[in-house]
Image (cartoon, chains in turn brown, red):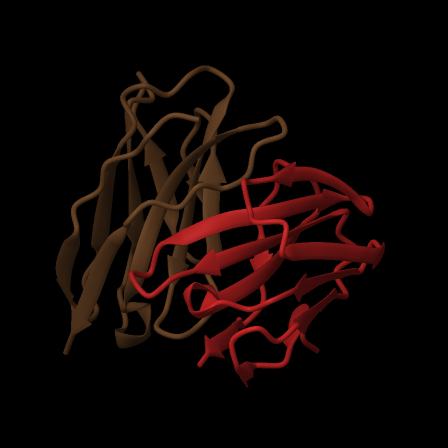
Length: 110
Length: 112
């Protein structure tokens, strides 16, 4: 599975949009982009995933560039409860599992 | 109604002991996993089961033996516990190999 690169930390003001970038320049055609987050002392939580098209659900939006070499997770109105480590993971559709990197520590402040 | 439940939540035990961690999912998922999160917070896959069959074993010492009595359960038995086994262990499940994973709340194992 392709590797991903994320900034180690980001800050966001409460109520503002949080835009978390991820680079995956070696992604191949059958690999999906997944986003998870882990709030302190809890299990990781699935947020969203996509292949080529932009995706949106009740938690977030995923924007994937046309060349698929990078993506951005958007939390439209960040709250204090969104403070967590966010993981961008690239995985193919076959017999492989999620491989977690270091992620981005997002701190949402009042 | 908990989707993926693990027991116990905390486990403190002495070196050399044998212990088990249980995991159950009520989501009707076909695939289950065990992950280990060490003190540096890295999450690493240990095992993956699909329909009760082991499909992935990521170079885990054979002191660790997963058991899947049915699709809804994946238990982890650890023999001869060592200090380095101290970590948080997460169970997870997914409908298939492509879908999102649902994680349990973790079992914090401390070996003294």
